[in-house]
Amino acid sequence: MASETKPRVLFDRQRIAVTVRRLAAEIKKDYQGQDILLIGVLKGAFVFLADLIRLLDLPLEVDFIGLSSYARGRESSGKIQVTQPASCPIKGRDVLVIEDIVDTGLTTAFLLDYLSRQKPASLRLCALLDKPWPRRVPVTIDYLGFSVPDKFVVGYGLDCGEKFRNLPDICFLEDN
Ligand code: 5GP
Image (cartoon, rainbow, N blue to C red):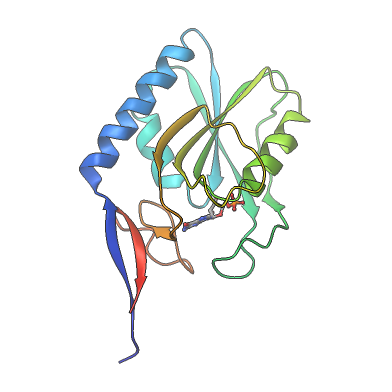
């Protein structure tokens, strides 16, 4: 049998739940009386977004945007493309972007610039994970779940070659 890459738990599901609750409380406090448009970045943020919105008892709408950046396996290609635009108008909306992970920052910086050109009333970023060390462009994360070491992480919506999104814990991959 071929050697496998084994996922090792970095943050387990209980710890993730505590963190998602904390983020929801911070967001609720800041957006009282506003009608937010949450934009989830496909595909990696879909599990996080699904858990987060169920803790936000605020008027909100959900949309998704598809971006491609990792054209060559685990290395950022640096070339970002919108593969699926958001379907809701952005102009005049209070937009909160929901990202799975900020790594080099290239994807998020591109996305924030792309959205800001559409003239939202406000634009903030909530990221579940941050890898501060490989950063190539500065990105301000308004709501952050966890900082992670410079390792490739999977699970809780994040993939490696479309696998592992269904892991309930956030894991890193160890090569055997
Ligand atoms: P960046 O442009 O900041 O380098 O990368 C952002 C995107 O790359 C994330 O939205 C995610 O899709 C992917 N990515 C970056 N690091 C990781 C990682 O450790 N694991 C996974 N699964 N995806 C990652």
